[in-house]
Image (tube, rainbow over all chains, first blue to last red; front, side, top):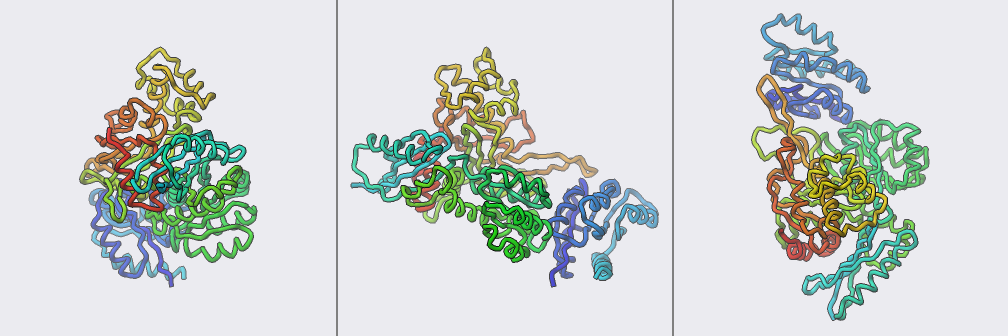
Length: 138
Length: 461
Protein backbone atom coordinates (compact mmCIF):
# COMPACT_ATOMS: atom_id res chain seq x y z
CA UNK A 1 0.00 0.00 0.00
CA UNK A 2 1.21 3.47 -0.78
CA UNK A 3 2.21 5.53 2.24
CA UNK A 4 -0.08 8.38 3.21
CA UNK A 5 1.57 11.75 2.72
CA UNK A 6 1.66 14.42 5.40
CA UNK A 7 2.86 17.98 4.87
CA UNK A 8 4.73 19.20 7.92
CA UNK A 9 6.05 22.69 8.67
CA UNK A 10 6.45 25.58 11.10
CA UNK A 11 4.23 28.45 10.09
CA UNK A 12 4.94 32.17 9.83
CA UNK A 13 8.11 33.93 11.00
CA UNK A 14 8.86 31.13 13.40
CA UNK A 15 12.16 29.31 13.17
CA UNK A 16 11.85 26.75 15.95
CA UNK A 17 13.19 23.62 14.34
CA UNK A 18 13.40 21.04 17.14
CA UNK A 19 9.74 20.05 17.39
CA UNK A 20 9.62 19.94 13.61
CA UNK A 21 12.41 17.38 13.50
CA UNK A 22 10.80 15.27 16.25
CA UNK A 23 7.49 15.20 14.41
CA UNK A 24 9.24 14.38 11.13
CA UNK A 25 11.02 11.44 12.77
CA UNK A 26 7.95 10.17 14.63
CA UNK A 27 5.60 10.39 11.64
CA UNK A 28 8.11 8.68 9.37
CA UNK A 29 8.64 6.00 11.97
CA UNK A 30 4.89 5.49 12.16
CA UNK A 31 4.83 4.69 8.43
CA UNK A 32 3.84 8.00 6.90
CA UNK A 33 5.57 9.76 4.02
CA UNK A 34 6.54 13.13 5.47
CA UNK A 35 6.87 16.15 3.21
CA UNK A 36 8.70 18.52 5.54
CA UNK A 37 8.75 22.12 4.32
CA UNK A 38 10.65 23.24 7.43
CA UNK A 39 10.59 26.48 9.36
CA UNK A 40 9.50 29.98 8.29
CA UNK A 41 6.80 28.62 6.05
CA UNK A 42 3.98 30.81 4.79
CA UNK A 43 0.50 29.34 4.29
CA UNK A 44 1.03 29.19 0.52
CA UNK A 45 3.98 26.81 0.90
CA UNK A 46 1.86 24.35 2.91
CA UNK A 47 -0.83 24.49 0.23
CA UNK A 48 1.53 24.18 -2.74
CA UNK A 49 3.29 21.23 -1.13
CA UNK A 50 -0.01 19.49 -0.40
CA UNK A 51 -1.21 20.06 -3.95
CA UNK A 52 1.91 18.81 -5.69
CA UNK A 53 2.28 15.73 -3.47
CA UNK A 54 -1.43 14.92 -3.04
CA UNK A 55 -1.12 14.92 0.74
CA UNK A 56 -3.83 13.69 3.10
CA UNK A 57 -3.08 16.06 5.96
CA UNK A 58 -1.23 19.25 6.86
CA UNK A 59 0.51 19.45 10.25
CA UNK A 60 1.10 23.06 11.29
CA UNK A 61 3.46 23.85 14.15
CA UNK A 62 3.85 27.18 15.87
CA UNK A 63 5.86 27.94 18.96
CA UNK A 64 6.34 31.67 19.10
CA UNK A 65 2.87 32.81 20.10
CA UNK A 66 1.68 34.21 16.80
CA UNK A 67 0.06 31.02 15.58
CA UNK A 68 -3.41 32.44 15.63
CA UNK A 69 -2.63 35.24 13.21
CA UNK A 70 -0.51 32.97 11.03
CA UNK A 71 -3.20 30.29 10.76
CA UNK A 72 -6.13 32.54 9.94
CA UNK A 73 -7.59 31.83 6.52
CA UNK A 74 -5.62 28.63 5.94
CA UNK A 75 -8.77 26.47 5.62
CA UNK A 76 -10.35 28.98 3.23
CA UNK A 77 -7.20 29.03 1.08
CA UNK A 78 -7.12 25.22 1.03
CA UNK A 79 -10.72 25.18 -0.17
CA UNK A 80 -9.88 27.75 -2.83
CA UNK A 81 -6.89 25.69 -4.02
CA UNK A 82 -9.04 22.58 -4.37
CA UNK A 83 -7.71 20.76 -1.30
CA UNK A 84 -11.18 19.68 -0.29
CA UNK A 85 -11.48 18.19 3.18
CA UNK A 86 -7.73 17.92 3.70
CA UNK A 87 -7.01 17.28 7.38
CA UNK A 88 -5.57 20.30 9.19
CA UNK A 89 -3.78 19.76 12.51
CA UNK A 90 -2.14 22.47 14.57
CA UNK A 91 -0.05 22.32 17.70
CA UNK A 92 2.71 23.89 19.77
CA UNK A 93 2.54 27.15 21.67
CA UNK A 94 -0.18 28.49 19.47
CA UNK A 95 -1.36 31.51 21.46
CA UNK A 96 0.17 34.23 23.61
CA UNK A 97 0.08 34.07 27.38
CA UNK A 98 -2.03 31.97 29.70
CA UNK A 99 -5.42 31.41 28.15
CA UNK A 100 -8.19 28.95 28.86
CA UNK A 101 -7.43 25.94 26.63
CA UNK A 102 -11.12 25.30 25.90
CA UNK A 103 -11.42 28.79 24.35
CA UNK A 104 -8.23 28.44 22.38
CA UNK A 105 -9.22 25.06 21.01
CA UNK A 106 -12.64 26.36 20.01
CA UNK A 107 -11.16 29.33 18.16
CA UNK A 108 -8.90 27.08 16.11
CA UNK A 109 -11.65 24.54 15.46
CA UNK A 110 -13.82 27.40 14.24
CA UNK A 111 -10.99 28.40 11.89
CA UNK A 112 -11.39 25.02 10.24
CA UNK A 113 -8.73 22.90 11.95
CA UNK A 114 -9.59 19.26 12.59
CA UNK A 115 -7.30 18.82 15.59
CA UNK A 116 -5.78 21.37 17.95
CA UNK A 117 -3.08 20.45 20.45
CA UNK A 118 -1.90 22.27 23.59
CA UNK A 119 1.78 22.58 24.57
CA UNK A 120 3.36 19.35 25.76
CA UNK A 121 1.32 16.98 23.62
CA UNK A 122 3.26 13.88 22.58
CA UNK A 123 3.76 13.07 18.94
CA UNK A 124 2.07 9.70 19.54
CA UNK A 125 -1.19 11.43 20.38
CA UNK A 126 -1.22 13.22 17.03
CA UNK A 127 -0.33 10.04 15.20
CA UNK A 128 -3.09 7.97 16.79
CA UNK A 129 -5.60 10.74 16.04
CA UNK A 130 -4.36 10.86 12.48
CA UNK A 131 -4.83 7.11 12.07
CA UNK A 132 -8.33 7.44 13.45
CA UNK A 133 -9.24 10.36 11.16
CA UNK A 134 -7.79 8.69 8.08
CA UNK A 135 -9.54 5.43 9.05
CA UNK A 136 -12.90 7.17 9.06
CA UNK A 137 -12.30 8.15 5.47
CA UNK A 138 -11.34 4.66 4.43
CA UNK B 1 49.86 16.69 -42.07
CA UNK B 2 48.25 17.62 -38.80
CA UNK B 3 44.91 16.42 -37.56
CA UNK B 4 42.36 19.07 -36.74
CA UNK B 5 38.85 19.37 -35.35
CA UNK B 6 36.42 21.87 -36.81
CA UNK B 7 33.82 23.43 -34.53
CA UNK B 8 30.84 25.18 -36.04
CA UNK B 9 28.50 27.53 -34.21
CA UNK B 10 25.41 28.39 -36.26
CA UNK B 11 24.45 31.63 -34.51
CA UNK B 12 21.41 33.78 -35.23
CA UNK B 13 23.62 36.32 -37.01
CA UNK B 14 26.99 34.68 -37.65
CA UNK B 15 28.17 31.19 -38.44
CA UNK B 16 31.43 30.91 -36.53
CA UNK B 17 34.14 28.37 -37.22
CA UNK B 18 36.97 27.34 -34.91
CA UNK B 19 39.76 25.12 -36.18
CA UNK B 20 41.75 23.30 -33.51
CA UNK B 21 45.07 21.47 -33.81
CA UNK B 22 44.42 18.43 -31.65
CA UNK B 23 48.08 17.40 -31.33
CA UNK B 24 49.27 20.69 -29.90
CA UNK B 25 45.87 21.59 -28.48
CA UNK B 26 45.96 24.98 -30.11
CA UNK B 27 43.51 27.12 -32.00
CA UNK B 28 44.73 27.36 -35.59
CA UNK B 29 42.20 29.90 -36.81
CA UNK B 30 38.69 31.22 -36.38
CA UNK B 31 36.41 32.62 -39.06
CA UNK B 32 32.84 33.75 -39.48
CA UNK B 33 30.24 34.53 -42.13
CA UNK B 34 26.58 35.57 -42.06
CA UNK B 35 24.20 32.75 -41.20
CA UNK B 36 22.00 31.83 -44.14
CA UNK B 37 19.18 30.02 -42.39
CA UNK B 38 16.51 31.58 -44.64
CA UNK B 39 17.79 29.62 -47.63
CA UNK B 40 20.26 26.93 -46.66
CA UNK B 41 22.71 27.25 -43.78
CA UNK B 42 25.41 25.43 -45.71
CA UNK B 43 25.83 28.50 -47.98
CA UNK B 44 27.07 30.63 -45.08
CA UNK B 45 28.98 27.69 -43.69
CA UNK B 46 30.78 27.03 -46.99
CA UNK B 47 31.62 30.71 -47.31
CA UNK B 48 33.17 30.79 -43.85
CA UNK B 49 35.01 27.55 -44.55
CA UNK B 50 36.45 28.96 -47.77
CA UNK B 51 37.70 32.05 -45.94
CA UNK B 52 39.16 29.82 -43.23
CA UNK B 53 41.04 27.74 -45.78
CA UNK B 54 42.54 30.85 -47.35
CA UNK B 55 43.69 31.98 -43.92
CA UNK B 56 45.51 28.81 -42.90
CA UNK B 57 48.81 28.22 -44.62
CA UNK B 58 49.61 24.79 -43.25
CA UNK B 59 48.17 21.50 -44.44
CA UNK B 60 45.57 19.97 -42.17
CA UNK B 61 43.16 17.10 -42.15
CA UNK B 62 39.79 17.60 -40.45
CA UNK B 63 39.02 14.43 -38.54
CA UNK B 64 35.96 15.61 -36.64
CA UNK B 65 33.34 18.29 -37.25
CA UNK B 66 31.09 19.20 -34.37
CA UNK B 67 28.34 21.77 -34.40
CA UNK B 68 26.06 23.72 -32.14
CA UNK B 69 23.24 25.93 -33.24
CA UNK B 70 21.06 28.78 -32.10
CA UNK B 71 19.96 29.67 -35.63
CA UNK B 72 16.30 30.00 -36.58
CA UNK B 73 15.47 31.23 -33.08
CA UNK B 74 17.29 28.40 -31.31
CA UNK B 75 15.51 25.60 -29.48
CA UNK B 76 12.05 26.71 -28.38
CA UNK B 77 10.32 24.91 -25.53
CA UNK B 78 6.98 25.17 -23.79
CA UNK B 79 7.14 24.06 -20.16
CA UNK B 80 4.05 22.68 -18.46
CA UNK B 81 3.79 21.88 -14.75
CA UNK B 82 1.27 21.88 -11.96
CA UNK B 83 1.96 24.46 -9.19
CA UNK B 84 3.68 27.55 -10.65
CA UNK B 85 6.37 27.77 -7.94
CA UNK B 86 7.07 24.03 -7.95
CA UNK B 87 6.84 21.66 -10.94
CA UNK B 88 6.27 24.46 -13.47
CA UNK B 89 9.41 26.17 -12.21
CA UNK B 90 11.34 22.87 -12.20
CA UNK B 91 10.28 22.21 -15.80
CA UNK B 92 11.32 25.71 -16.80
CA UNK B 93 14.75 25.24 -15.20
CA UNK B 94 15.25 21.92 -16.95
CA UNK B 95 14.42 23.51 -20.31
CA UNK B 96 16.76 26.44 -19.67
CA UNK B 97 19.52 24.05 -18.66
CA UNK B 98 19.05 22.22 -21.96
CA UNK B 99 19.89 25.48 -23.72
CA UNK B 100 16.35 26.22 -24.76
CA UNK B 101 14.39 29.39 -25.04
CA UNK B 102 11.29 28.92 -22.90
CA UNK B 103 8.47 30.50 -24.88
CA UNK B 104 5.93 30.14 -22.12
CA UNK B 105 5.32 28.24 -18.90
CA UNK B 106 1.90 26.83 -18.11
CA UNK B 107 0.47 25.62 -14.81
CA UNK B 108 -2.50 23.63 -13.47
CA UNK B 109 -5.03 21.88 -15.72
CA UNK B 110 -4.83 23.35 -19.20
CA UNK B 111 -7.92 24.65 -20.93
CA UNK B 112 -8.79 24.64 -24.62
CA UNK B 113 -7.66 28.17 -25.35
CA UNK B 114 -4.26 27.40 -23.81
CA UNK B 115 -4.00 24.34 -26.03
CA UNK B 116 -4.91 26.48 -29.06
CA UNK B 117 -2.14 28.84 -28.03
CA UNK B 118 0.36 25.98 -27.71
CA UNK B 119 -0.74 24.51 -31.03
CA UNK B 120 -0.24 27.87 -32.78
CA UNK B 121 3.11 28.53 -31.14
CA UNK B 122 6.31 27.66 -32.94
CA UNK B 123 7.60 25.46 -30.10
CA UNK B 124 9.98 22.64 -30.99
CA UNK B 125 9.42 20.57 -27.86
CA UNK B 126 6.88 20.41 -25.04
CA UNK B 127 8.15 19.54 -21.58
CA UNK B 128 5.32 18.01 -19.57
CA UNK B 129 5.77 17.89 -15.79
CA UNK B 130 3.46 17.81 -12.81
CA UNK B 131 3.25 16.08 -9.47
CA UNK B 132 6.02 14.70 -7.31
CA UNK B 133 6.61 10.94 -7.63
CA UNK B 134 3.54 9.36 -6.08
CA UNK B 135 1.95 12.80 -5.72
CA UNK B 136 -0.65 14.62 -7.76
CA UNK B 137 -1.67 12.71 -10.87
CA UNK B 138 -4.91 14.33 -12.06
CA UNK B 139 -3.24 17.38 -13.55
CA UNK B 140 -0.57 15.73 -15.67
CA UNK B 141 -3.08 13.11 -16.89
CA UNK B 142 -5.56 15.83 -17.80
CA UNK B 143 -2.86 17.78 -19.62
CA UNK B 144 -1.73 14.68 -21.52
CA UNK B 145 -5.32 14.04 -22.56
CA UNK B 146 -5.62 17.63 -23.79
CA UNK B 147 -2.38 17.34 -25.78
CA UNK B 148 -3.73 14.17 -27.35
CA UNK B 149 -7.12 15.74 -28.06
CA UNK B 150 -5.49 18.61 -29.91
CA UNK B 151 -3.21 16.26 -31.87
CA UNK B 152 -0.07 18.29 -31.22
CA UNK B 153 2.61 17.43 -33.75
CA UNK B 154 5.48 18.41 -31.46
CA UNK B 155 7.57 15.91 -29.48
CA UNK B 156 6.51 15.78 -25.83
CA UNK B 157 9.06 15.09 -23.11
CA UNK B 158 7.19 13.53 -20.20
CA UNK B 159 9.04 14.29 -16.95
CA UNK B 160 6.42 14.22 -14.20
CA UNK B 161 4.97 11.95 -11.54
CA UNK B 162 6.36 8.51 -12.37
CA UNK B 163 3.16 6.84 -11.26
CA UNK B 164 1.44 8.40 -14.29
CA UNK B 165 3.93 7.28 -16.94
CA UNK B 166 2.01 4.15 -17.97
CA UNK B 167 -1.28 5.93 -18.24
CA UNK B 168 0.28 8.70 -20.32
CA UNK B 169 1.78 6.09 -22.63
CA UNK B 170 -1.64 4.65 -23.29
CA UNK B 171 -3.16 8.11 -23.77
CA UNK B 172 -0.57 9.15 -26.35
CA UNK B 173 -0.33 5.79 -28.12
CA UNK B 174 0.81 6.32 -31.70
CA UNK B 175 -0.86 9.69 -31.95
CA UNK B 176 1.71 11.81 -30.10
CA UNK B 177 5.47 11.52 -30.26
CA UNK B 178 6.59 11.22 -26.65
CA UNK B 179 9.75 10.55 -24.66
CA UNK B 180 9.41 9.49 -21.06
CA UNK B 181 12.16 10.43 -18.62
CA UNK B 182 12.67 11.02 -14.90
CA UNK B 183 10.55 13.51 -12.98
CA UNK B 184 11.91 17.07 -12.84
CA UNK B 185 10.77 17.15 -9.20
CA UNK B 186 10.72 13.63 -7.73
CA UNK B 187 10.40 14.94 -4.16
CA UNK B 188 9.02 18.25 -3.06
CA UNK B 189 11.53 21.10 -3.47
CA UNK B 190 14.20 18.73 -4.84
CA UNK B 191 14.83 19.18 -8.50
CA UNK B 192 16.25 16.69 -10.94
CA UNK B 193 16.86 18.46 -14.20
CA UNK B 194 19.61 16.39 -15.82
CA UNK B 195 17.58 13.49 -17.28
CA UNK B 196 15.10 15.88 -18.92
CA UNK B 197 18.01 18.00 -20.17
CA UNK B 198 19.62 14.97 -21.77
CA UNK B 199 16.36 13.81 -23.40
CA UNK B 200 15.77 17.29 -24.82
CA UNK B 201 19.29 17.40 -26.23
CA UNK B 202 18.80 14.06 -27.98
CA UNK B 203 15.55 15.18 -29.57
CA UNK B 204 17.20 18.41 -30.66
CA UNK B 205 19.98 16.42 -32.29
CA UNK B 206 17.62 14.14 -34.18
CA UNK B 207 14.79 16.46 -35.08
CA UNK B 208 15.84 20.05 -35.19
CA UNK B 209 18.45 19.49 -37.85
CA UNK B 210 15.59 18.70 -40.18
CA UNK B 211 14.12 22.14 -39.60
CA UNK B 212 13.94 24.67 -42.39
CA UNK B 213 17.29 25.53 -43.90
CA UNK B 214 19.16 22.97 -41.80
CA UNK B 215 18.58 19.82 -43.91
CA UNK B 216 21.96 19.80 -45.55
CA UNK B 217 23.92 20.36 -42.38
CA UNK B 218 23.84 16.72 -41.39
CA UNK B 219 26.00 15.71 -44.32
CA UNK B 220 28.68 18.25 -43.44
CA UNK B 221 29.10 17.48 -39.75
CA UNK B 222 30.10 14.37 -37.88
CA UNK B 223 27.76 14.80 -34.98
CA UNK B 224 26.74 16.35 -31.68
CA UNK B 225 24.49 19.09 -32.70
CA UNK B 226 23.43 20.86 -29.56
CA UNK B 227 21.86 24.20 -28.74
CA UNK B 228 24.64 26.78 -28.38
CA UNK B 229 23.69 27.81 -24.83
CA UNK B 230 23.95 24.15 -23.82
CA UNK B 231 27.50 23.94 -25.16
CA UNK B 232 28.45 27.16 -23.35
CA UNK B 233 27.06 25.66 -20.15
CA UNK B 234 28.99 22.46 -20.81
CA UNK B 235 32.24 24.43 -21.28
CA UNK B 236 31.58 26.32 -18.06
CA UNK B 237 30.96 23.03 -16.26
CA UNK B 238 34.20 21.37 -17.31
CA UNK B 239 36.24 24.51 -16.69
CA UNK B 240 34.78 24.69 -13.18
CA UNK B 241 34.67 21.05 -12.18
CA UNK B 242 37.40 19.63 -14.35
CA UNK B 243 37.38 16.26 -16.04
CA UNK B 244 38.56 12.77 -15.13
CA UNK B 245 42.24 13.66 -15.38
CA UNK B 246 42.29 17.44 -15.23
CA UNK B 247 41.63 19.72 -12.28
CA UNK B 248 38.95 22.38 -12.70
CA UNK B 249 39.31 25.96 -11.45
CA UNK B 250 36.34 25.87 -9.07
CA UNK B 251 33.09 27.78 -8.81
CA UNK B 252 32.42 30.35 -11.50
CA UNK B 253 29.76 32.29 -13.37
CA UNK B 254 29.60 33.08 -17.08
CA UNK B 255 28.07 36.28 -18.38
CA UNK B 256 27.15 36.10 -22.07
CA UNK B 257 25.71 39.31 -23.52
CA UNK B 258 24.26 38.78 -26.99
CA UNK B 259 22.21 40.75 -29.48
CA UNK B 260 18.85 39.46 -28.34
CA UNK B 261 19.43 37.97 -24.89
CA UNK B 262 21.78 37.93 -21.95
CA UNK B 263 22.61 34.52 -20.49
CA UNK B 264 24.06 33.94 -17.05
CA UNK B 265 25.40 30.51 -16.11
CA UNK B 266 26.60 29.73 -12.61
CA UNK B 267 28.46 26.60 -11.63
CA UNK B 268 28.24 26.72 -7.85
CA UNK B 269 26.11 25.40 -5.01
CA UNK B 270 25.39 28.90 -3.77
CA UNK B 271 24.90 27.88 -0.17
CA UNK B 272 24.76 30.73 2.36
CA UNK B 273 28.17 32.25 3.09
CA UNK B 274 27.06 33.64 6.43
CA UNK B 275 25.91 31.73 9.47
CA UNK B 276 22.33 31.72 10.68
CA UNK B 277 20.66 32.14 7.31
CA UNK B 278 17.57 30.12 6.50
CA UNK B 279 17.17 28.86 2.94
CA UNK B 280 13.81 29.27 1.29
CA UNK B 281 12.27 28.22 -1.98
CA UNK B 282 13.15 25.62 -4.56
CA UNK B 283 16.53 23.89 -4.47
CA UNK B 284 19.00 25.35 -6.96
CA UNK B 285 20.76 23.25 -9.62
CA UNK B 286 24.57 23.25 -9.30
CA UNK B 287 24.80 24.30 -12.97
CA UNK B 288 22.20 26.95 -13.43
CA UNK B 289 21.38 28.96 -16.51
CA UNK B 290 19.07 31.92 -16.66
CA UNK B 291 18.32 33.81 -19.82
CA UNK B 292 17.00 37.33 -19.98
CA UNK B 293 14.94 37.81 -23.13
CA UNK B 294 14.61 41.53 -22.51
CA UNK B 295 18.33 42.25 -22.18
CA UNK B 296 20.38 42.39 -25.35
CA UNK B 297 22.46 44.79 -27.39
CA UNK B 298 20.33 45.04 -30.54
CA UNK B 299 17.06 43.12 -30.89
CA UNK B 300 16.32 43.85 -27.24
CA UNK B 301 17.80 47.36 -27.05
CA UNK B 302 14.40 48.95 -26.42
CA UNK B 303 13.50 46.55 -23.66
CA UNK B 304 16.85 47.25 -21.95
CA UNK B 305 15.80 50.88 -21.90
CA UNK B 306 12.38 49.89 -20.56
CA UNK B 307 13.84 47.61 -17.89
CA UNK B 308 16.49 50.05 -16.69
CA UNK B 309 15.20 53.52 -17.50
CA UNK B 310 17.29 56.42 -18.81
CA UNK B 311 18.66 57.13 -15.34
CA UNK B 312 20.46 53.81 -15.02
CA UNK B 313 21.91 53.96 -18.54
CA UNK B 314 23.10 57.53 -17.85
CA UNK B 315 24.93 56.36 -14.78
CA UNK B 316 27.29 54.37 -17.00
CA UNK B 317 27.69 56.98 -19.78
CA UNK B 318 30.76 59.17 -20.17
CA UNK B 319 29.07 61.46 -22.68
CA UNK B 320 25.93 63.00 -21.27
CA UNK B 321 24.81 64.79 -24.44
CA UNK B 322 23.45 61.63 -26.10
CA UNK B 323 19.73 61.25 -26.74
CA UNK B 324 19.27 57.91 -25.02
CA UNK B 325 15.94 57.05 -26.60
CA UNK B 326 17.22 57.79 -30.07
CA UNK B 327 20.38 55.71 -29.57
CA UNK B 328 18.32 52.79 -28.31
CA UNK B 329 15.86 52.98 -31.21
CA UNK B 330 18.71 53.14 -33.71
CA UNK B 331 20.18 49.90 -32.45
CA UNK B 332 16.83 48.19 -32.36
CA UNK B 333 15.84 49.05 -35.94
CA UNK B 334 19.30 48.57 -37.39
CA UNK B 335 20.39 45.33 -35.74
CA UNK B 336 23.61 45.03 -37.74
CA UNK B 337 24.73 48.42 -36.35
CA UNK B 338 28.41 48.43 -35.43
CA UNK B 339 29.66 51.00 -32.95
CA UNK B 340 32.67 52.80 -34.40
CA UNK B 341 33.22 56.25 -32.96
CA UNK B 342 33.95 57.02 -29.33
CA UNK B 343 30.40 58.01 -28.42
CA UNK B 344 28.83 54.98 -30.07
CA UNK B 345 31.19 52.65 -28.28
CA UNK B 346 30.56 54.46 -25.02
CA UNK B 347 26.83 53.98 -25.45
CA UNK B 348 27.15 50.29 -26.37
CA UNK B 349 29.29 49.66 -23.32
CA UNK B 350 26.86 51.52 -21.06
CA UNK B 351 24.09 49.28 -22.37
CA UNK B 352 26.24 46.21 -21.81
CA UNK B 353 26.81 47.30 -18.21
CA UNK B 354 23.08 47.62 -17.70
CA UNK B 355 22.62 44.09 -19.09
CA UNK B 356 25.40 42.81 -16.82
CA UNK B 357 23.96 44.48 -13.75
CA UNK B 358 20.33 43.44 -14.22
CA UNK B 359 20.98 39.91 -15.50
CA UNK B 360 23.23 39.06 -12.57
CA UNK B 361 20.75 40.57 -10.13
CA UNK B 362 18.05 38.29 -11.54
CA UNK B 363 20.35 35.28 -11.57
CA UNK B 364 21.78 35.61 -8.08
CA UNK B 365 19.77 34.99 -4.96
CA UNK B 366 18.72 37.59 -2.45
CA UNK B 367 18.37 38.02 1.27
CA UNK B 368 15.17 38.89 3.01
CA UNK B 369 14.72 39.99 6.58
CA UNK B 370 11.82 38.67 8.61
CA UNK B 371 11.00 40.75 11.67
CA UNK B 372 9.90 38.20 14.20
CA UNK B 373 9.33 38.08 17.95
CA UNK B 374 12.69 36.28 18.08
CA UNK B 375 14.49 39.22 16.51
CA UNK B 376 15.46 39.66 12.88
CA UNK B 377 15.73 36.46 10.89
CA UNK B 378 17.49 36.40 7.53
CA UNK B 379 16.32 34.14 4.75
CA UNK B 380 17.98 33.44 1.45
CA UNK B 381 16.24 32.61 -1.79
CA UNK B 382 18.34 31.52 -4.77
CA UNK B 383 22.11 31.17 -4.88
CA UNK B 384 24.56 33.09 -2.69
CA UNK B 385 27.36 34.06 -5.10
CA UNK B 386 29.01 36.62 -2.78
CA UNK B 387 32.25 34.66 -2.49
CA UNK B 388 32.29 33.38 -6.04
CA UNK B 389 35.95 33.23 -7.14
CA UNK B 390 35.52 33.75 -10.90
CA UNK B 391 33.33 35.71 -13.30
CA UNK B 392 33.90 34.89 -16.96
CA UNK B 393 32.74 37.14 -19.78
CA UNK B 394 31.84 36.18 -23.33
CA UNK B 395 29.67 37.46 -26.18
CA UNK B 396 30.53 40.02 -28.87
CA UNK B 397 30.28 43.23 -26.88
CA UNK B 398 32.51 41.92 -24.09
CA UNK B 399 35.03 40.05 -26.24
CA UNK B 400 35.51 43.02 -28.61
CA UNK B 401 35.53 45.68 -25.91
CA UNK B 402 38.63 47.61 -24.90
CA UNK B 403 37.35 47.61 -21.33
CA UNK B 404 35.84 44.17 -20.79
CA UNK B 405 36.68 44.36 -17.11
CA UNK B 406 34.50 47.44 -16.63
CA UNK B 407 31.52 45.74 -18.25
CA UNK B 408 31.92 42.59 -16.17
CA UNK B 409 32.42 44.59 -12.98
CA UNK B 410 28.95 46.02 -13.46
CA UNK B 411 27.67 42.55 -12.59
CA UNK B 412 29.27 42.56 -9.15
CA UNK B 413 27.83 43.47 -5.77
CA UNK B 414 27.23 47.11 -4.88
CA UNK B 415 25.57 48.79 -1.93
CA UNK B 416 22.83 49.97 -4.29
CA UNK B 417 21.41 46.46 -4.04
CA UNK B 418 22.39 45.50 -0.51
CA UNK B 419 20.16 42.42 -0.37
CA UNK B 420 21.33 40.94 -3.68
CA UNK B 421 23.81 38.06 -3.39
CA UNK B 422 25.88 38.98 -6.46
CA UNK B 423 29.59 38.11 -6.58
CA UNK B 424 31.47 40.60 -4.43
CA UNK B 425 35.06 40.48 -5.63
CA UNK B 426 35.40 37.80 -8.29
CA UNK B 427 38.52 37.51 -10.42
CA UNK B 428 37.48 38.60 -13.90
CA UNK B 429 38.12 36.17 -16.75
CA UNK B 430 37.70 36.75 -20.47
CA UNK B 431 36.84 34.38 -23.32
CA UNK B 432 39.31 36.31 -25.46
CA UNK B 433 39.21 33.97 -28.46
CA UNK B 434 35.45 33.47 -28.23
CA UNK B 435 35.80 29.71 -27.93
CA UNK B 436 33.42 28.74 -25.11
CA UNK B 437 30.79 27.12 -27.34
CA UNK B 438 33.48 25.26 -29.32
CA UNK B 439 35.05 23.99 -26.08
CA UNK B 440 31.66 22.79 -24.86
CA UNK B 441 31.46 20.66 -28.00
CA UNK B 442 35.02 19.44 -27.55
CA UNK B 443 34.16 18.47 -23.97
CA UNK B 444 31.53 16.08 -25.33
CA UNK B 445 34.23 14.06 -27.09
CA UNK B 446 37.37 14.81 -25.09
CA UNK B 447 36.75 16.50 -21.76
CA UNK B 448 40.40 16.39 -20.67
CA UNK B 449 41.52 18.32 -23.72
CA UNK B 450 38.68 20.81 -23.34
CA UNK B 451 39.75 21.59 -19.76
CA UNK B 452 43.40 22.06 -20.77
CA UNK B 453 42.49 24.31 -23.70
CA UNK B 454 40.04 26.37 -21.65
CA UNK B 455 42.72 26.92 -19.01
CA UNK B 456 45.08 28.02 -21.74
CA UNK B 457 42.77 30.34 -23.65
CA UNK B 458 40.60 31.84 -20.93
CA UNK B 459 42.61 34.69 -19.47
CA UNK B 460 42.38 36.70 -16.30
CA UNK B 461 42.11 40.45 -16.84
